[in-house]
Length: 368
Ligand code: NAD
Ligand code: GLY
Image 1 (cartoon, rainbow, N blue to C red):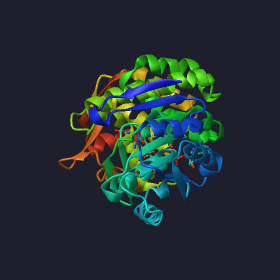
Image 2 (tube, rainbow, N blue to C red; image 1 turned 90 degrees about the horizontal axis):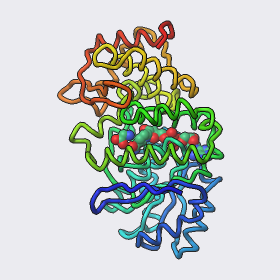
Image 3 (spheres, helix red, strand yellow; image 1 turned 45 degrees about the vertical axis):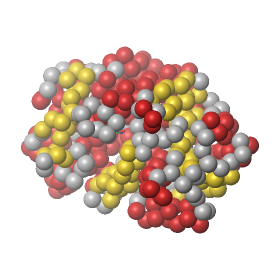
């Protein structure tokens, strides 16, 4: 097992990466000195696999857990489902000292974290991340939120978890497409911060796709450590550093929004977004064509989409959707661009015509 500390003063916590961690959930919570009553929020796919084991472990440590199960999928990150969670919390008589356990992927983590941040003006919460994407990214850093029709994560809060458990055993039931979606965020960390990580994924992709626990332990803890460095320095995304984590997300989020959140998985949308951002980086920054091609090729080898065929009408729709994203500032859409593999810069202005030009190259006719 590896432990990655997230240093945030009194909001500091530890991410644990290893096997058999759900069985130790109760022990971990007991050390945090939380109240007795707790609620496990999970989704309809994850609950049947892991909710019993989580509840058993909590009970053995003297907690009184109950269960709230939401439908699986991005559409649960909504005001409607958040409202249903509040009603369930009230029925279960949660109190100020009660706590919430988000048992699932990024959807459950963002939703349950948001409900925890706002119910009774804030309950403590614990993340038990069950997808690769959640283990390398969404469970760490305290961004929680829900979507509106107008855009992703438009309603949210910063609410740090008390601890994060990344139990590798949970990845055993994760569908292949979901696993590959998480790899898009892993590759992103390499591009923005760590050329060695990028090389390691290039070299060990076969073992990663076989879900080799040793390689995964290394990769997941390295991603969490990178996120820890960034979040510790810029928790509230005011210094331009945390924004680096949005490489590929400007186009990715807009693509998710215009496709009604059900055509592309998050990692798939940001895979296409990263190919676009890499090509923009060649045009507008100092990334070499060769490294842009490496980014494209690694995403493609990971089985992620790297092409996007849009009608001119849909393409214009996507450019408009970018303007309701959270990354707009002073009315301008801001991009993260790569200066080289492992070094990125946030807050870059890119004109609509540059974006349109790059989107036109994604139709599958150009290599790299
Ligand atoms: P997800 O939570 O929808 O999980 C993917 C699918 O896998 C779901 O159908 C789920 O039920 C199922 N599943 C989860 N764990 C499983 C397991 N162990 N076995 C079998 N099935 C399992 O999606 P995700 O990819 O984990 O997260 C995507 C979300 O994360 C998006 O909403 C995205 O915006 C958000 N996100 C948030 C942050 C953040 O910092 N808060 C960062 C990145 C992404
Ligand atoms: N996933 C972006 C962030 O946590 O800031």
